[in-house]
Length: 462
Image (cartoon, helix red, strand yellow):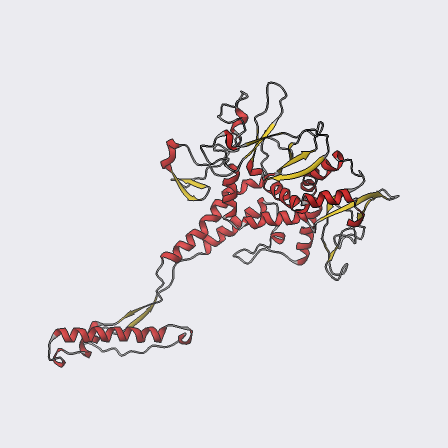
């Protein structure tokens, strides 16, 4: 299992070098990846204390896994891919709707206008700034496949307020293995992973129990993890090796730009040229006056050569000079202008960057068409048809489970507060179409078919 890159122990500190925030490499250039034991070290402990000074389960060996990953991703254009995934998850925004099944068994939706939503629900959504709350938990889901929601009740089972707590600032208490086997509390702090942290710097909040919701607390909504006890790890976290490769290439190119001397021509001028222009007998005061005249002549000549060769107006100019012949019949040294080729070739590195970019995009489960990726070799985004089909596939297949998870808080509040069970919340979709179906090239929720291959009515995906 790949993960972010951890700083080694003090014993091997000298064998490592910090190359970027959150990224370290060994002297041999090897990348150190996390394992389950590193990302969830407390899951290997058998005592309820976990063999640690803290009552919560560490997230990474130094309890700083999320911040390390955030720093590594944010330093690469891959961060925009996560923003794109969050935007696709959000779609065209939230909507209320009712479900109906026709005589053929097809499920249809009927959008409920805002003015027909009960006033109590509208007031609750406004008081809790629900659209921004929803966008917060969407981003946490795309980063961690998990989101922490704090439910505040009236102590009689009715939810009065919901709060999005940043997942990176939440730690689960070690399971009570002696009694319930459950996570009974969570801890909130912005200092996790900073070192020398005291327990008093984290706020202890009970785990919310939807079966006995009289007490406020935090509920962790998440996708099921096949091997993590406390922190699910999305498959895209495996891109960290490629992130390291992609991060090195711009640094290599920038180093060449900063440290290279860009010389286009080597102009050779025989010293005899200046000596003959300034014979010693022409100067009454001797060699000092002559040397000063030669130096002045050199400076002015170099400036004239620069003016003659440099700039777009001088492209393709010819240069003429006379060459004398010696007694042996060979030409004597004369002026020469030798072009200097720039041997720095970025092509191989750009190809490597393109490979890393494709691997990162694939790791994010996005096609080049959706990501808008253009590679150095000119390949990348496909045709409009490819974009339409890839986009519609992603929206119809890849967003179903994520959306179900991020809509769980609504379902939780709706049931606990006794709101109408038939009233559902979902995300509006924009469905790309071919122009023979829609002149605008897209359809709104519950309109025409999503692709040119079908004319059936579109089913909604909450």
